[in-house]
Length: 189
Image (tube, rainbow, N blue to C red; front, side, top):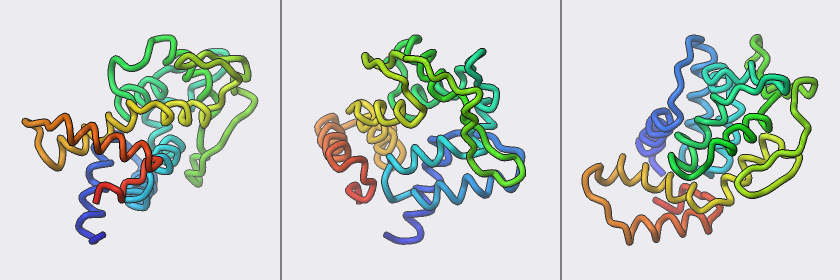
């Protein structure tokens, strides 16, 4: 793939994973993550951006603790980044927020930190499944849902092909192939 395509996809992901970061260092870390994964695997990108210090800070996940879960991070993961509105319940938000408790970062280095003292180890119910889910488990369950592939393909179509016209057959075919490839973005090139 060309450098120009990588940069266009980096910009696309920057818009998709909307985030306002005031620290130049954290902004650069996030941009590096988006560029690194721009044409790779969406699963890898989702896991990386979910542990990104700028994203965790912007969506207040450092305040997400077992005694008082903060739902902001979980809501955005479901609504804006993966499944889209209408493909999850309010309970899915509450339960996934519990799974993301303890996800934080070191403010000096920007490294992801899991704080087990504030993580909710209880059983959670998410998208019809029950278990002692971690944040990683939640992301895996989301990625096991074909709606995630469709949501991403629809956004890519709207950005690169047409925001006015949709070809449902092509979108469905691409979404199926994207899901079957385990979210390999290069299958779209």
